Length: 181
Image 1 (cartoon, one colour):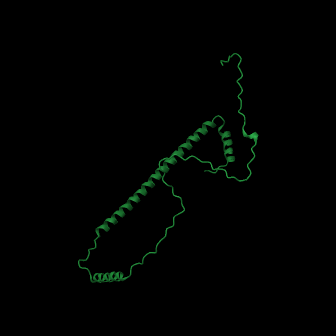
Image 2 (cartoon, one colour):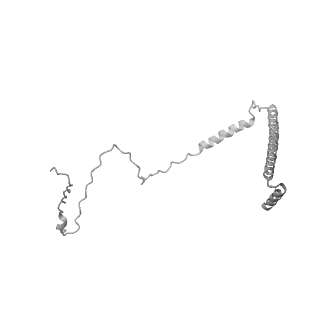
Image 3 (cartoon, helix red, strand yellow):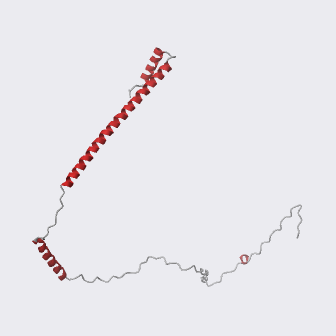
């Protein structure tokens, strides 16, 4: 705002410290701060009053423009005279009727459009979902028979033919418990 650098501010502070003294410097700074606050409040109040005056002037101008438009509309309405339709049609209307009848006669004499060629609609390859019928039980899956590939029968391996059943180990007896078998 005042374009004061830090070095200039330090110089002013040092001069104030020497001139006013260290005891009275806080009191002087408080007084200066209060004065600056009063000046800022007065400036903001003045600015607010100025803005209010500008708004009032703009509103006055807008009101004047609205009144001018209203006056011009009311004067235009007083000069309004509706157009009266003529009672007897002029001779040109009779000529128009004759031209219309002649055009209709020419249109009627023209041949109509020929038949359209037949259109073959091929079935589309798009699958359309069919509505589901009540839930029927699903058919069981049937295994397909193996096709005989080789003429020779496969040799049966005895080791893989049947495995003996696995024997369970009896539980180890816990000391202190007796078996009730």
